[in-house]
Length: 203
Image (cartoon, rainbow, N blue to C red; front, top):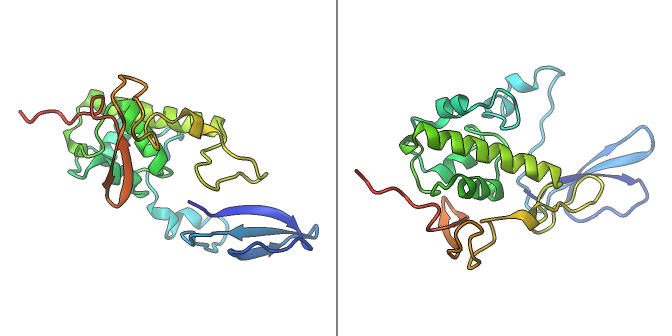
């Protein structure tokens, strides 16, 4: 979201919305700044973090080798929930935010309102591949600086220059030329191509 860490000299002025400061042994400070205050902080004994809330509830990690098409199907394949809100649920798949879900669904050719349990095995494989590809490309590009995101070195991400769906409302789809549309789904702005991401007709 908006939370970020940075290492600063102790005499550097503290920015507004800095909520936690760690004083390091070399005399610098690790500061946590969170404008929207969505972040939380927890203390664990070493080795216990994955067995206790909230981390024990995290879903599949898309860049882990264990994240296979079958693992994704086993996690979401029987759920009648619409794809967009389900993929945003960190207990289903970890690490997917609004930008990356829109991008993955566009690349997979899946409408964000499709129920997860309506996907064929082939479509589930396309969704799996789209998720991993989008995240790998985003990591290589340093993330997406849509508003204020910067990394730990203060550098902006560049993946926003490769977006096909998110934030592209009214622009031609890179695949078919149809104009990208925007709606709201589960309270989130949702971008999709009405031609490439059609909902199949009921049989």
